Amino acid sequence: MVTVVDAFNFGRDFGSIDTIYQRELNDDAADTRTIVNLLTEQIEFADVLILNKTDLMTPRQVGELKAILHKLNPKAKLIESQFSKVDPAEILNTGRFDFEEASQSAGWIQELQNHKDGIGHTPETEEYGISSFVFRDRRPFHPVRFWAYLSENFPAGIIRSKGLFWLASRPDDALNFSQAGGSLRAEAAGVWWASMPFGKRTEYGAFMENQKDIESRWHKRFGDRQNELVIIGQDLKQAQVTAELQDCLCTEMELKHMENKGPFKDPFPVWE
Image (cartoon, rainbow, N blue to C red; front, side):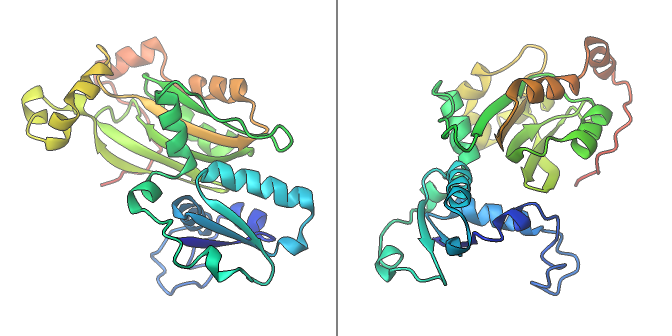
């Protein structure tokens, strides 16, 4: 699976919030996918990345881009090219592609696995300042504070962030968080097991197959609910970002308000 990266325009495209429709890449006005999300997904799934137009860049710019791409997809082979000239043997009949491996090749997935295994993240060269960490906390985000943070104060140095989160206003809902460059989106991921009676959970094969693992991570107060966000960025101030995210979490008073089924103002969209 080969993805060609326009190396010279990567920074512009990655920072853009243009949609595919706005770039006239299709004629479906309802298609709200952004260029950067499509670009990121293609980078994360490929096993070969061709960096084209590297002749228009300085060696340091090429090195920085390689560090970013390696963080987004640690397993991909990187090939530099000019005018898309590549030795066919590098991309044809290589036997490299494996669907299961490709589906798990994204850097954020690797980061979660490393964290789970106690390995920690693999640091990039200090020269380019690319690093990552996992933010975890059981407490829900306060919908108003978290929305304000994402809308107004989200750090520009974060390249990619991905994971699950929950809001005090919607305690039953597991929500997906996905950010790449200038594009940030959230959407429904389903419901938490804790929101179901035990008898109902056992009707699902996914629960029965993973019951021991789910119960090993079970929290007396919150069940399986948790925020788990992988943060990948350049010149990241981990302590500061962590503190800012923690400020968006509910206080003990707000948690008790949630547990008493009190209402919260919630500016997030309502998803099916």
